[in-house]
Image (cartoon, rainbow, N blue to C red; front, side):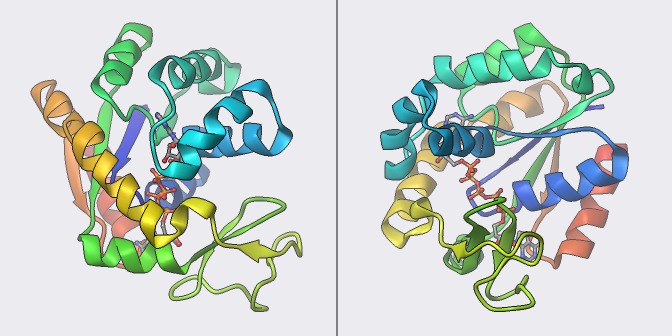
Length: 209
Ligand code: AP5
């Protein structure tokens, strides 16, 4: 099953892609995580992406399309994958359609007030990248990663001003993708305001529908 998770920043794409990936044994492919890894390792692509990501803007299409083309060619994608954060523009979606067949697109809808609360509460491990939330997914010891003991930090792009910029970019450039995939008959919308277990059940139903 070749899946796309769509949704605004903080809608829960990463959280739910990770849960589903473990359950149905297909990889979660997050362009955001791949770009952050490249940034951390100081690769040429990471350095190019730095200014875009920190301002809440999209990294240029040709860069992310190249990353995805390379990633989808790997063996672990043969039985399917979950794209988390790609595509984000119409040109990215058109490039993807030329690369591979997509079966379902799950659009996770969450009201903006909840998005702001979720993103202001998100903390990530500076070492392994595990994600927590001071409201809903607290670590056992405050500020410390349960998995590796690393220090929990706030993502730079989760600062309120950058979140505003990301939401604007989402409405202008990414939201039109719902119309694109609706026309193809692949779009399923899930309300993502419930707790993680309930939202996961709705996503499973939408994937199987
Ligand atoms: P990326 O990392 O993809 O960020 P995003 O799309 O803005 O998404 P987020 O990671 O903020 O949110 P999410 O929907 O995954 O929510 P999460 O599950 O973490 O991209 C970052 C940047 O990289 C972009 O701004 C851009 O610069 C660049 N980039 C990436 N892809 C690109 C592309 N294709 N083209 C161009 N540029 C690209 O959840 C958020 C919080 O809510 C968490 O704390 C979580 O615990 C909590 N939560 C989630 N669901 C629930 C629930 N059901 N109940 C309770 N809490 C929940």
